[in-house]
Length: 264
Image: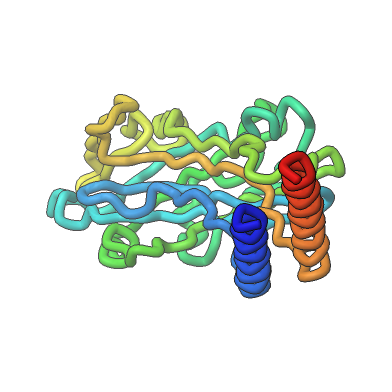
């Protein structure tokens, strides 16, 4: 009999824990955090496209940000800083499985019109660009940004109905690369980045694609927003768990009764 009572008390304690877990779940509505972008790095300029949650058949305007802690590293003679990017394109499953289409790339008013070297999608060559200049009067704003960065543009994107309902899955990326040749657009320039002095002399900022580079390009990743269960769905799951506990309880009771009958 003592064995039976001990088992009964154990099962009752399990029920109590189950009720507490359900009550706690009622207030847990915040989704899991999206993996962070690179953000601001000491002594560097980061050009970053925001990581984004996506759903099927939706339109998104995804920020392109500049994070910078570079003001003290730029030479005093610099009058204009140039940064070239290309290859703003879908990568991974986003491209291979037709999950989305980039409809346009645009610039914000933070970059004046005269400083927009090449922005958008070039249909003839099948590539996309976000290449711009930062004038001396903007150095203090765009080369020493707050931690949240400054939005300098947007990638406009439309998802298709092919995006699967899989949570916590990385669906692919929008790539951004520093492979632009400024020489095509600026006399005397070469490379992907550099600065011009008052006499028109251009000095390249070398980018070797390693951790020593002064300019970093941060690709965006896409995820489904973590599924948040409604209270009805949580109640249903809780009820299933309690049903399993009840079944386990009765099986235990029957086992104990069987043992008692054997001993009678």
